[in-house]
Image 1: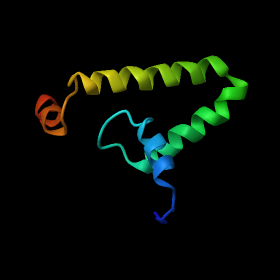
Image 2: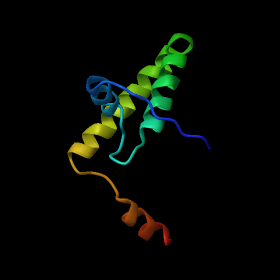
Image 3: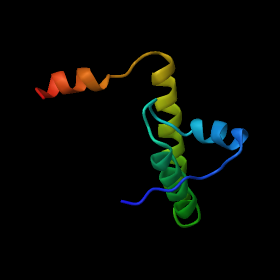
Length: 79
């Protein structure tokens, strides 16, 4: 897998942060999510709306501290 560096303004980074569903989500994952939303917004506007609603719900869970850490998930899964 090849990796590259992108230069973005601080404001752009801050906006991308708003799409994160969890703290450890990479910017690559966030950008892919935004691309997916953009591609489906015309052909399937309801699906894009649902995706955005799910992101908002995830943010609220994070703010409330309702999430499972990686260590907890591994423990639950017996890994």
